[in-house]
Length: 377
Ligand SMILES: Cc1ncc(COP(=O)(O)O)c(C=O)c1O
Image 1 (spheres, rainbow, N blue to C red):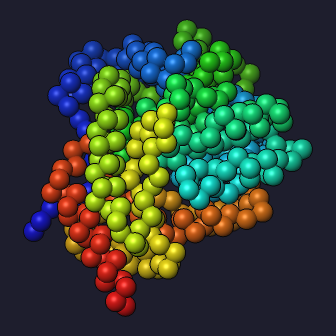
Image 2: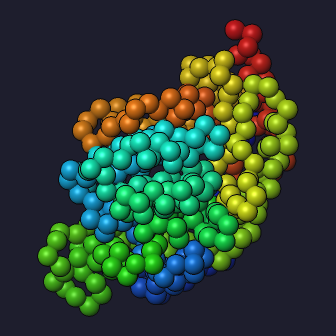
Image 3: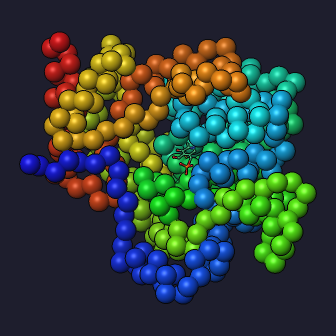
């Protein structure tokens, strides 16, 4: 049987393995030099003062929001087209995620919709750099300045992305990265908060470890978490981070290859090309079906692709339509028409460092033949 083409697969080199083995040999598996080295390297890659490594992107989002004093009764404006963790983190703190619609061309939150969603309860904006494409941070920062709001970037999918001279992860009060295995850089599980603000960094470093900074057993006055990262994870992520430019370049090549193979197809809307002056560190390659296809058609196309040995993903269902969104702490501002139309039609194609030409041929053939089948129904 032909091997399945997976949706994602981490790139692990001999150096990565060695870095992890060295930690095992050292006997120090948590709270040690690899975590500090990883934080320094990440901060330098983003051009910020510091980073606090944590156990996941979700943990990072919670800490960053807490550090910005977001709590019960506060509203945080974010996008409906994101991974559920973005809104879960807001809701876990007792705050409300207010969803403002996306720009249908770039798939990121539309700054004009943010302005409309502001109320006296709004405290922060949480833009997501979806699939590695930088959100319009110039406009968002201006809105935040005018309305006295904090800005927390969800940069979980955007390590290595840049807008002009600035890295994603350096354009808000705080930013959050995630290092799950489908990301450009992985630590297995893991995350980090980056910031120029010493108070935010200190909060994250304290609260990831029950309010305790190294050397202090008592901790602070507020209950904290165990959101620590292990030395094994930090060593893997640091080793991968050393080759970030290479990892990003390969992703850009792969995105270019998909675009070349699929651009003539009338039933597909491809992700927008990288705007001038922008680096997209493609986290995923996600295509949108034409309007004539609905969510059921998309699911059938995905199923046919799987039957042909090609795994795909549904990035993302619109968050407000998920079962967990039926509870409190989430509200749609006005309409989210663009996000819903997109969410119903997206298909994430296999996308990873070692994806080869033959695999890409299989993916594109499976996609196009599955669409043709759908049209015959
Ligand atoms: C946009 C976005 N936000 C948050 C997260 C949460 O990260 P984690 O899975 O590491 O908790 C992810 C990760 O997959 C993500 O893609």
